[in-house]
Image 1 (cartoon, rainbow, N blue to C red):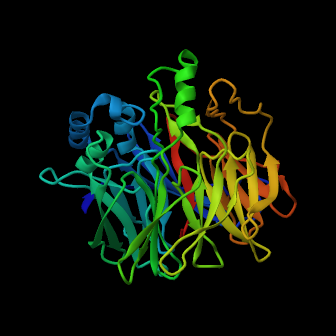
Image 2 (tube, helix red, strand yellow; image 1 turned 120 degrees about the vertical axis):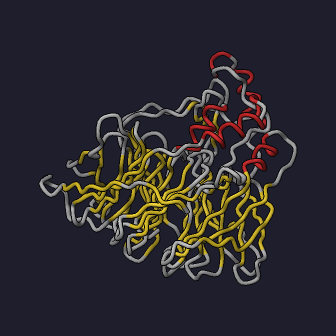
Image 3 (cartoon, one colour; image 1 turned 60 degrees about the vertical axis):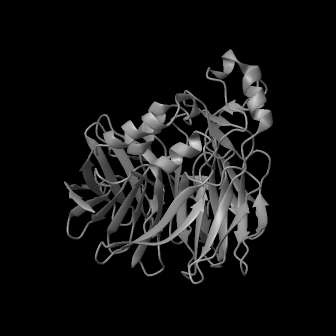
Length: 442
């Protein structure tokens, strides 16, 4: 890894009134014209530790991807693909302050950061000029004792070949960073689809599970807005999204197997807090048009899966018919039971009983008209500034801290209502959030 410049500041919000004592820490990615900064937000200490780094030069990877891929084959557009190389997706922090940041949101980035907050040192994992550029997962994963952090990467040229229809697999390398030394080990290689979004270690360290974020339509969207060619969008909608899978790797035997999910697109997954064999996968069911816009293809799901002796079957799902998945889901423990809190675009928060996979509670955040699917069967996703895209349950399950593009809000789980108190995000002019938040230690 290459060492890079690092900045730091501390922001206190001790003086803000009416915020309850909430035991939650989470990390958030931010961006502004001069670079990126990363917030570790601590509602128990009522402060923010902010770490900043300059922009990276991705011109070499940009030049190669533009040269290798035909313009009509890019998801969204070529400019959107390159922008995703630079966008930061999620911040993961170990309890001892080792901080990792992945790139890419809908697509993937060509690097990741590692920041040692105790030594105030920052490093970037990125190939040298004489090496093949690589794409990396948008979210990595810690092992149970926070000694290693895992990722997947694959050659840029493999993604280019897949987009051009020349192959359907990439040479995926699974690696780990030793948190104590910063050493990187590539310890396994397998062939799989590209655009892998998340890799997560099972709580017993036996398995690695990873998911792709490929929402490719069987029939491509027209290269115009939906209103200009509704019949073209209807044909794409009716053809549907190409199904994708969850991959499970046995760390002992190095065998892996693939399970197709019943709702596209798998993207995010989170393990149960009580059963180390069970995890929950997002069925987002949306894709990206050429503009780019998020196009919701219908209702999504939370899919419950369980690792069972060389298989990972689906054992349940929450698919009520009106769950429109765009962002985050997080399981938490409340009174001894697993509750999954999930954003429901654009104005609802669903809380799901993790055992029964049924709705436990739904909150409407603000008035908003129902999504209109009448034109094509699909819908351009609304993006109101009040919508919650990041959700952070407290360790005791009593509160959920939610973030919009404007401020933080607080949901009282026991009382079943939102508090009147809100809090600013403390962003400088010209800055905004990217990706979604993640609780410290996950």
